[in-house]
Length: 199
Image 1: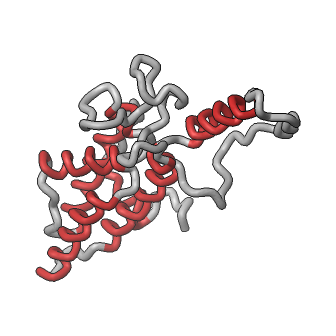
Image 2: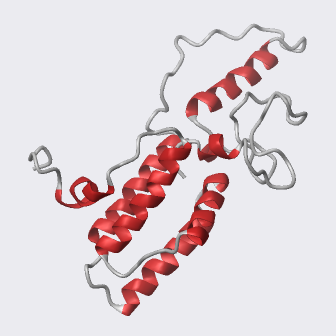
């Protein structure tokens, strides 16, 4: 669900139909750079692809169109390449993932220590719905798989926070990132660090 979980997924199981990630070893679609994730509609999925891969795709398509014989006037070159996604653009998989983890960990941080039955049901329903509606479909399917393997814990703040930290660490492992020490999740997401830098 975070950055390019599709990178880990692309070498494992793939759904029937169009390839979820453009690969030089596969036939369709030839026009997309490696790492661009294909949506279930058969088109490139912006929310499943990192900005650098999306930009490479756009640049590749522009270069082909500029070199086309039908182009009468040469197009001016861009002044400089954009190295990061501008804030006012649709989110790429990295921004979407980071924002999502911020939201989910903040929900865990504000979840009651002793939730009512209604609150537990609400959280259970939200997480199930969230896992189906997440814009990066590859990430969503991975999260649904995680929820099937590791039962969602909604009995209280600590329980849910630790479950969520475990889910986040699974994504970190898939992406080759450092795991987070789950004993510190409340400092990171609820109370602030003990050194006072958040005060």
